[in-house]
Structure formats: C-alpha cells, structure tokens
Image (spheres, rainbow, N blue to C red):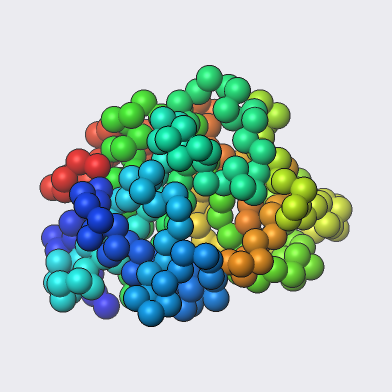
Amino acid sequence: MQIDDSHFELRLAADEDEIREAQRLRYAVFVEELGGDGPLVDHAARIEADRFDPHFDHLLLRDMRRDAGDRVVGVYRLMRAEQARAAGQFYSEDEYDLGPLKASGRRLLELGRSCLHPEYRGGTAMVHLWNGLADYIARHGIEVMFGVASFHGTEAGAIAGPLSLLHHRHLAPADVRPVARAGGFQRMDLIAEADLDRPAAIRETPALIKAYLRLGGFVGEGAYIDRPFNCIDVCLVMDIARMSEKHRAIYSRDRALAGTANP
C-alpha cells in the first residue's frame, strides 16, 4: 500500500471505544498472527486486553482513508510512574525486578504493546508513532523509558545468537538494570562472545529491538519465557541522559509530528 502521510491522524485514545480500536489491532497482531493468548483475551469479539489497559495511555495512529472502525493501524501503550502506582505495579514487573529503575528517582515511562498493521510495516507509520512518543516524553519530562520486547516462540536455543549478542554487547548499566524473575528466567549468555556469528545474530534480532539499540538502548539481565504469549521477552531500557546528543535530539519536543493532535 502506498501511504499518503496526510491521511494519518495521531493522538491518545480518549475513551473506551477508542481503546477497543487499539485492542482489535493488538488481537490481529499478537493473537492471530503470533499465537498469543491471555485471561482477558476475547476471541469472539477479537479483543486483546489485560487488567492494565485502564491505567495506560494508548497512542493511536489512524489512516483516515480506511473504513470507520478499521482505521487504527499502529498503537503504543504508555505508563508513567503515577499510573503504575494506581495499577499496583508496572506491567513488566510480572516478568522483571525493576528495583534499580524504581530506586533511581528518575522519571520513568513504560512502553508496551507496540504494533503495526501488516500493510504499514517498513513505511513511515513507525516514524509517526515515534514522533508522537517523542512529544509525550517531552511533555512529561521522562528520563528513562523501558519495556519488554519479544522474540517469537519459546525455544531459547533457536535464538541463542541474538540473546548472547544482547547480553555481551548491550547489557544495561547496573544502576538501571532490570533482572528477569525466576519463574521464567532464561540465561542470555548462551554462546561465548568470541564464538558469536555477529552478522547472523543481528539479522535474527527483531526490527523493533534493533531500532531501540540504534538509539542507545540497553537490555536487562536475563530473558523471560512468556508461554501464554508464545514468546521470549527481553527488557529494553533507554536512559536519555546516556544517549548521544544525536540520539537525544530525537526525543526533543521540536521533533513532534506536525499537524497532529498532541498526545
């Protein structure tokens, strides 16, 4: 599909109906495409939901050329510390001990459930979402972003190269390093650094994870095997203060997407 960017609309969900639009796209991607499931997934209504949805902000990218009810083509879930307190925890605390992050005194933002409609991958849609995220970060004075990102499947041996590369080259500094919880903990240093086929490991790493790493991101200690969602998660951390000036500029307010409602 040829994308005409003037047809995109980017803003936060304003009500339950708009959150439902995000949940329908999430169902198509995380359940139908990737085989995930969960206690609040509604297969009859094609809704992927969890108990945290009411506490997150939901960033929606719409293509206004599409039929009403089918316009959301990209989503992001965003949770600040005060929202996590209302929810009782951050979403990723089920999988990772976030103690160092929470003790840092920094302004935190958890990212999650990022996905795009298949027709919009590889185009400018992700750029729009990231620019909306940049404006949100600037408005709330966010200092550290984090969240889990996934490899499809639950066999760690199949992704030993990418996991080992992340561990050896991109492990987060100790003061902002989450640690995977024992219930699903998976060692990431499965191959010695000297024995790694680095080009192959990079090719096998999902595009979203590579994008965060290019922006100066790190990973936590250990991966987490999430069997209900049929994936292996890593916890990504982006400390804006540790980014280069070039990368930090991406998250300045003046990079916010022109012509859209402010998240």
